[in-house]
Image 1: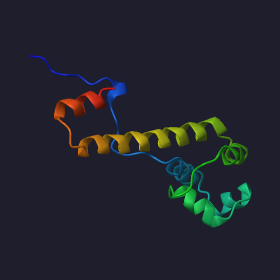
Image 2: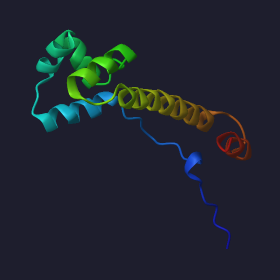
Image 3: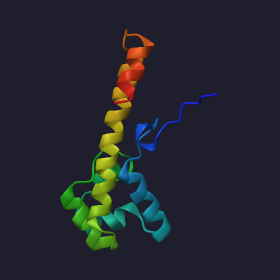
Length: 113
C-alpha cells in the first residue's frame, strides 16, 4: 500500500494570483477608490485600473510609492509580483509537458525536477 505523496515544493498551482488582486482587496478594506490611490501615487487612473486587473505589473518604483501611500512595505509588493511571474512560468511549463508527445514516464520525470 504505497501511496505516492507530493512534497510542497513539487506542487504547481493551476492559477497565478497577480498582486493587483491584493491591491484591490486592500483598497476595499480601506474603502478607498482606485482613482484616489492613483492620484496619490502620481499615476494615471487607467494605469491603476490595469494594475488592479492584472494587465500591468508592479514595478520596484511603484512598490516604493505604494509603501509610502499605504504603509505596506515595498518588499511585500515585489515578493508577490515575483511569485506571480514564477507561477506563470511553472503553469506554462506544466501545460507544455502535458501536451508534449512523450511517454507518461518521461512526463513524470520532467515534472519531478
